[in-house]
Image (tube, rainbow, N blue to C red; front, top):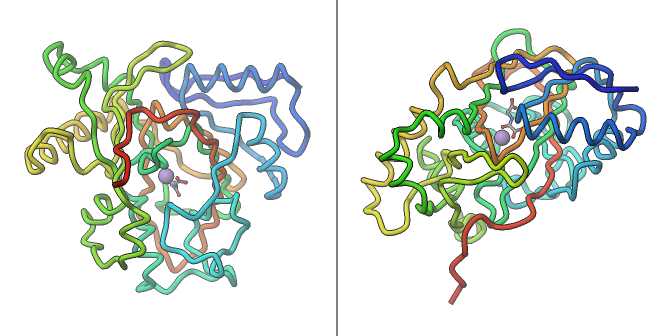
Length: 295
Ligand code: OGA
Ligand code: MN
């Protein structure tokens, strides 16, 4: 088995062939996929009829797994999947669509805003891997923005201004944008803001990218309204059509992206229908900025 990659856009998002995730991968294939991620930042695989175990085994080729718990308000006893599988479906434990007014569903609607996975963790995620087990025919596309190209397209003054800026990221901010503000004390403590650099450099390619997400709700040393207006401008800039790849799901598609170099969002769909998508996440290896120590 030898993987090959055909780019969708010059340098951004590739379609992989010659990979069967039901089988162990050779070292060469793992290296080719890793190199493809460095170059294209998003990789799309088709016809991967995999189990959760096979998805976990494939993911472990690329690093340590992140586990559920900190990224949502779903309680462990409500989990449909094991904790290493991040449930991004609209389903409850009985595999039925959550009622439209369910608090967990409301919270998960945050995925409709542009974001980078786990930017609200002190060590943000490296890769996310999403398996489309049951997809919908209409809507529910996942869109990806190339944050390297978006950075490159900034003018010199803006690049200089943002070079050393540090943002504060929290689920409280992204959910606040949707008017979801009712959080318990415990939830607020769990979602305490973390610091992230606004400009990151890729450790292998050396390319710089904008590290943004709807979770970003402040810039250290800036007045909040000014920070938020600027972050909004930057997200608008970065998500212009020339930087975006749209993935329209077919059943058993598998999409893998580099959260250090991209943002993504899911588009609206009929949530009375089943959309069973399951994510595994490769943890990052270091914080992007120094965190403030809790007193
Ligand atoms: C995710 C996510 C988008 C989707 O898995 O991190 O944001 O299409 N999913 O469900
Ligand atoms: Mn996501």
